[in-house]
Amino acid sequence: MASKPELLHNQAADEIGQDFLLAYQRAVLLALQQQGILNETQFKDCVQKLEKYTRMNGGNE
Image 1 (cartoon, one colour):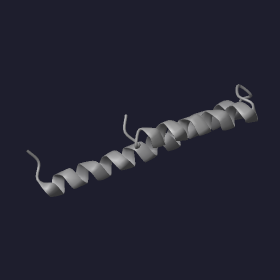
Image 2 (cartoon, rainbow, N blue to C red; image 1 turned 45 degrees about the vertical axis):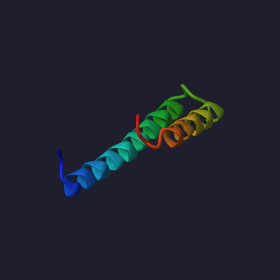
Image 3 (tube, rainbow, N blue to C red; image 1 turned 120 degrees about the horizontal axis):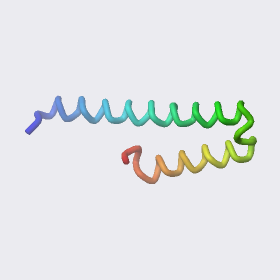
């Protein structure tokens, strides 16, 4: 069983990992928009769905 400091450290790492994942996913969507694969409306819709999914899951999958 992990001690409290280890648990807090792991939780912080998970939050950082989730923040990174969200930023990475948004960057991929932006790249797709810039390449003309997604238009502005599709890009905004995808970002909204991604943010909603992240909020609903508390940042955890």
